Amino acid sequence: MGKLQSKFRKRSDLYRASQGEKADNTVDSQVVQYEPAHQGSINTVTHLSPDLCVSGGSDQTVVVYDWKQGRLCQSFQGHNREVTKVVCYSGSTWIFSASRDKTVLMWDLHQGDEPIQEFCGHELVVNGVAISPDGRKLCTGSRDNWMCLWDIESAKCEQRHNISRNLVTHVCWVPDSPSVVQTSEDKTIRVWDSRAWQVTNTFPAKQYIQTHCDVSPNGNYLVSSSNGFGGQGCEATLWDLRQPGCKVVEYRGHLQTTACCVFLPTPPGGSAQVATSSHDGSIKIWDQNTAACLGTLSLDGAGPLVSLAPSDSTNLLCASFSNGLNHIQVGQGSIQAQGYGAGSGGAGGLDVKVVARF
Image (cartoon, rainbow, N blue to C red):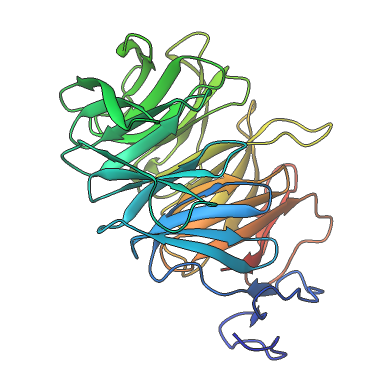
């Protein structure tokens, strides 16, 4: 992509770095631009390893990218519609991608560029995919109202369950548990027992569609996010899974649909935090327990921010419709960053900023 440019672009303090090249990032507002991972909007991002992320989007490809070095590692092509979700099995090189083509494909980073397994059976777009803690089962959920449980080795569907109006938006497996949690366009959250493949709990319906969910590493808490507009809805909600349906706090401040919500790794000696991203083009960091907003980052022109992937307590990746993948850094900044990509700290004064884009 050429050598590091010394001149800033007119529209922002954005500058480019060649593929894999480190930048002298002396000004907080400068954002290193690496080779783009995708052409078009990006719907989903997750981590495969501490250095590698996996993403998918409207270009129908699944991309493995070294986000620390700014280097595209692998591009998988097998879907014929846009990719909606990607998940990875921890400690392995397995990647699973869901798509509007109604399938889920399994890839292995070390086994070529063809899918090693295909999971077919849904009748509409697959929006939810999750891997069991032991790596043997795959859960999928779709707008066709079906929740399916698959054997990964054989790609055989072992369990199916259809619930009227359960248009699945997201699925996650509770760590070290047989339980699966899913959100739905019918505004509810359901907890499934993967052994009997039955719903064990249905949370009280929210006012708006539930777009996404995440489970805390200890399996005690669930955070879900809501559709909305004009500040109505648009919240994320913390639930206590030990008391199903028990709402703890709500995180309010986004002006449009909150598309993604994730638990952040707790910093040493710090408090537990939650991150949210929204169609309003902003990312917010919250104190998990008090719901105080600790910092906000607005990405002008990025469009909807639809997926977050935390790496550690200070680094997370964000997928956008219009501005690719963004490497976000969270820190206790005493000097407020200025200009494009700067965060505005709330109570607690977190400095949230973009340091690279690809």
